[in-house]
Length: 392
Image 1 (tube, helix red, strand yellow):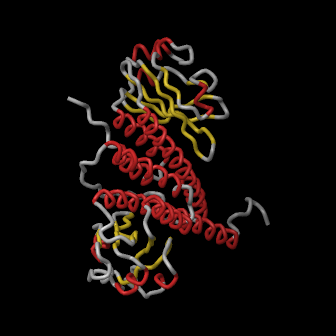
Image 2: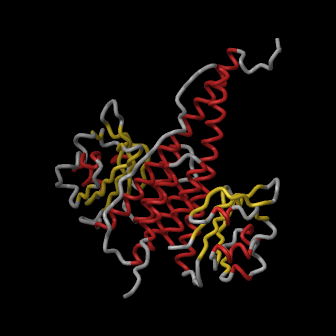
Image 3: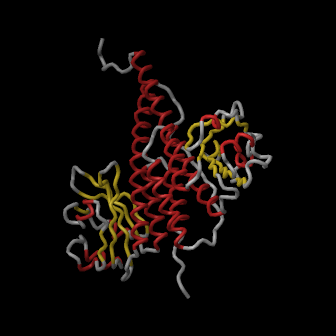
């Protein structure tokens, strides 16, 4: 009986949701270790961050390691598999007998046989190491190493973003306390996302989808500005899927209109065809369901069929963008070929749209927090609260 390889696309998608939905650095690290260990069927894992002041690696998260092993002592950058600090993934097959490994006796006692070390990079700097442990001899396949590196890269980006949010949040909270203002902490929020049904997709297809999702996710995560994030999202999705064009529209809750915020490959004439209304323009997508329109010229769900025909649009894939358990807009791809999109396309683009919802929500939250901080700093200066004690 053959062992079916993991669905790397699904695992990366679900891990991305969890990591990017958490604005707490600690939660991010715990999730990263736990999901990587489970995905690769490993004995255990840990995550260590670099302390540049002490030149040590400090444990910040672990999964399935004993308290005795965790208490063994600190790890040193120059003695504990130092090659990883050069952004290299290193696998040591026999950790108990390799001189690059610290605490070899403790590893033997813990039942650790092999150690895979993956660098965690944030803003071009190695900020930590993801350590993955095997209980016996194991040869990692190329796709497993690629997957572990992708999760570590995602973790580095999530850590960098979470640190920014936390830093801004601490500044704002401290300032408000000084002013005697008691407001809810904007950093505390929970998100849940829908998943999708399993598919009978082959390993080659899921690997291809995982690589595309990884590339797009890391690209859009580089933008904390919401407008820039949306531009990156639509550009990457159109390029990856080979669509004729695409548009990202967010829902205006007051007017019920779908407001265009980013587009690619569509003419000015088509984009200015008129207002799109949530109750008339492929409205099922705004109920949270992906919609396939195989013939845009005759489908009654299309609000402007004549404009679509003039643009050369034959089929449309419209998927919801979800953030904080609410549909906040739609991502639409347009094709010149009737019936262009398959079920696999629906699943892939839906996953991208859900990641887009997280990215947009996070960027907006960062903008809001930054704006609030600037506003209250100005208010504090006006009230004289930022003066040194005893100053005139």
